[in-house]
Length: 283
Image (tube, rainbow, N blue to C red):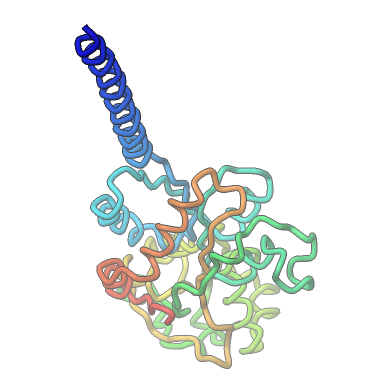
């Protein structure tokens, strides 16, 4: 009788232990599944990028689908000045890539106070790096009707109209440096020989359509538009054209933002796309 009682108790205890083990396994499996599901959730990563990156980044977005299939890159392309203002005004943005240091510095609390005059603190400085280098060039429309051959011709009677970016956008700032160095900026302004574009794409279009005799743009935009480059700015004519990249402090997806920046910094296929049109990868 006692043996039968002990056997019954043993069976009950084993059953409880088995149930407990089964439940533990179930919880553990459920937790793993939830983690995997969370990792695979779709994410929209908002990237603000200089207008001169438009075509190359659209190609890179296709490439990135194989790297992070759950991440959808949502681009806003415009002048770096416009993008900087939108970020300052509270636009949702995860990653910012500027065509000059100035616009990035104006949002980075760790930048020199003489540039970041308002003490803005939007950039995650730990993620910031110098990404690309471009070159500023003088381009002419098809068949070069005005026969502009170099920057020296900007002081001649050949020139009726030159297309430039506004001074508050990087390509315009570089153009101002060049024309000031050449000593012709004031004369061109006084003679109303300048037409302005709000970003490098607008300047490129003006030249492509023959609305201007020539224009100052980036080498990469000249390549994309099939424009003839007749001269290149030297180091003494304007600042080095560096594109910094960084994540935003208020990014809703900081891990994905950092992953995308790492991809841009290290992926050889992405680098090949950029180099093909004339960008230099900053080491």
